Length: 342
Figure (cartoon, rainbow, N blue to C red):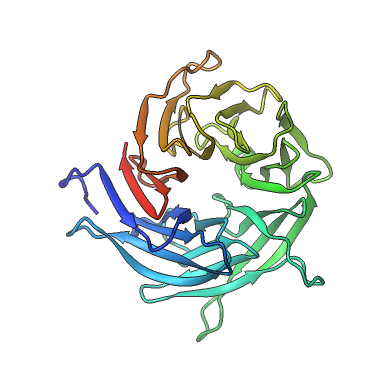
């Protein structure tokens, strides 16, 4: 899709509800496609797939389906070559894998790790491994992380072609775990980190799960909500505390000491996204309506100001940088999705 002829810098879509979770499609043939999750404080929620129409340069809703509870995260399968089935995952009460076609979105499998309990411990987040798309990791309020293995079989009639099993479950933190993310270090398959209500960032290796490394602890022991690995340099990651107005950049080679603090926001930060194509650019978004892009090249010298700022018409809930189209960033606020050319 060539949008360069039109040279519009911003495209906007208004959903029928508050947008919280969102994700850019990764497949090369579905470039300007995003999934949006509703935030409605009741059982019945929605996921909507939207795509940008080249002719009208408007977003159109392609498909909407029901989802129990709001999605805490949505991800498309990290399939940059388009060789896997067109799958999407959502977390909420459970991890669900969905199969997307042009006409419908169908639940392929529901992955539930507490088989012997009537209660489920909600999932706060998950990550889909980019090197091995048969691996996913989930984080839960029950203090654990679970690594799931997917099997993708052949399609036989209407039989579900995706199934999953627990590869490992570990107690990751002393309190609730709020985020999990695989690292690209060491082959990109076995290392992951998590953050949680105990205020720590912990790193794990699937090959040696008997111990973990604490990379950082919040000085005030505030809960850490989000964790985001640099896409180009696996030594760096970013995190943020609950109700915090700054983003902390960490270097795993120098544990417990932030290499940078990005603190221009005037209200609490909600989202972090590293540039997919550059090791020194990161976008942060907050309740102050601002999405800020930072150049962190001069670390460890202090980074005073962002290089780009965009002011939205509401508190920004989420920011996602398109991995296959690095000049586009998506933000959502209120019931709106906007994609911005950077």
